[in-house]
Amino acid sequence: MGNRLFVGNLSFSTTEGDVLDLFKQAGNVTNCELIMDRATNRSRGFAFVEMGSQEEAAKAIEMHHGKEFQGRTLTVNEARPREERPRNNFGGGHRGDRGGRRNFDRDRR
Image (cartoon, rainbow, N blue to C red; front, side):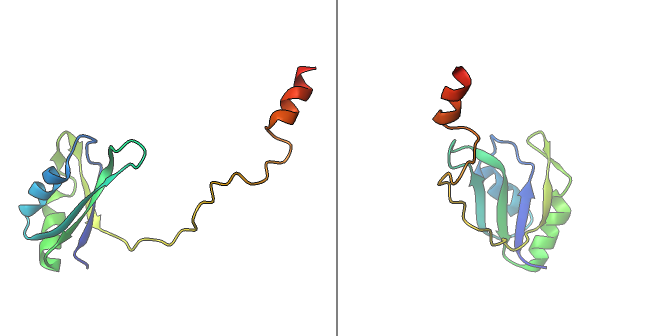
């Protein structure tokens, strides 16, 4: 078991400080990262917390998994390694015969 924990089902109003204070109850927190949406700058409802030791991480899971925090039932478990995903091009690409100005004009006749 590792020291890094996934904390899910957080309220969107939860702050990083709230999460940090909660997990300090289980031991030494070496890192706390509340994940934010880039577009809206709002919480995405989950965080990653790194505890000082594996024992403290296990204690944090035992203390907080399935427990209510700010009106939500928390999911707390060991974080999985991040999966490598291909970068999205966002360049549009080929759309075939769907969409575009050409079809709009043809359909208006």
